[in-house]
Length: 632
Image (cartoon, rainbow, N blue to C red):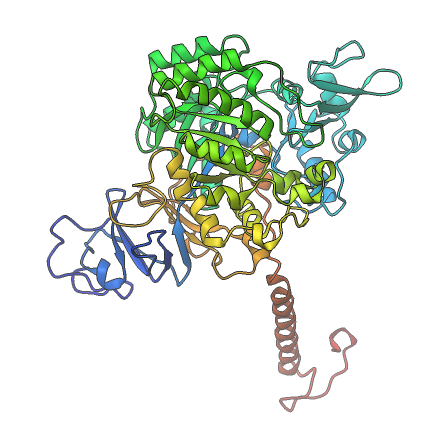
């Protein structure tokens, strides 16, 4: 090592004074995210941090006998992606039990997957398709029917969640969930019935998704060991797309500390492959203030470390203050909630807690801001606590000014790429063209981060979200935004890297590749800055590194990542189908056809030569033999 070049690098004669690098990446097109040095071709990592960024000469002096040298082969490298609104903890607990339709292009294929899974699923278990897809992505442009689910899986309960709008159940799932003619509709939900009053397998959020959550909660769950395996594989799936961090937005049926135990145990064992900042969400209406007081006395924001840390409360503080994002239903009219909501916000701000708030509509945002402005008279806003609105699809320019004055931030998700058609149908194409008002957000001076709201609404694939930001198109290829309302590629990537770091107060160490920052980066399958717009959604990572650890590797790098236990149980849909169902980039279609023609021509020539060698065709002086089986 001290006398031979390594991948074109010549190690120094003397060891580096601070010790050699653990890992060196070279021959790369690095987008650093650092305005002082936006591009580089090599970087070096020591003890989980970047210690050099530049070219081969800048990293060569850090080589040592144990340095791992990786060649990027001229590929694009970006800072690790950070989803600022992902239900990663809840998603991990259930991942291996779910049949994912993310990326599936036709209902026919989706039903074929379901039919095959029915033959593998043991008695007593459910098949669950839980978010990440939309009927608009299918060639058929429609949902499955309960009858189709029953035909594909006559005896196995099947629960198919479509966004936060509806669920479709087969006959076995209706029975397993205990729905009968006498089951009343829950508040805010509807059990659709046939002419005789019997549940027909369709559940509607009208507009509350509680009926969908509560039905899904009746399905079997994993034991503690299974939850760890499931979570590790979900994190590995996120690493597949270059994700290195996520801000967990908590959510319904995610109790603290019980449902957080799995990621805590994995963190203690050093087995997290994704950095997680989490939030705490009161679960029971009427007990929200008691929960918040108990948590304030128990933990504090930023407790933890670089891998797992508490970030604050939310995305609900009080249940009465939450609106719903079911664009197939009219905007909900919320009742009075300000009194209790004010108590919750005051409690958090006085104790140094930040928070995030689910708010889809400007009507809700204006009411929340009025509470904050009342508290600002007592000096509680702005007070240095990080707080933000999530979603904010219809936020107005006036509300943006008020958010900026109160020191808030925004986290936007690509729910419109899955629900944009429904929104446009209800409110019109002109309103949809400025929903959410991305350009106004970005020019307001408010910190803006991007995310997905996966796994029960959008897909967890961040490149689908980046495609939406850049092109303004839905997964069904509906154009929502004119060019002037779309986001430039570099800005969109910044929203998905340093933007997420601002939400957790880590922008000085995360989301940028420069000396002293976390060594979190991804080597991409295709150059994000060069591919056609429609190819963006098809990008994946070939090599994902978090804190200097290679946590995901594919293609030329397959096998260099950390080992992970096999998917279990053996009948898991993930064991058979994997997660996101990738398809070739659109621009590669013609090239793929040309490659296949070339392969066919080469095979034909090889076949002709085989005939010549055996005397079945002229070319080497052999006899002409007629054999109809070999006539070209």
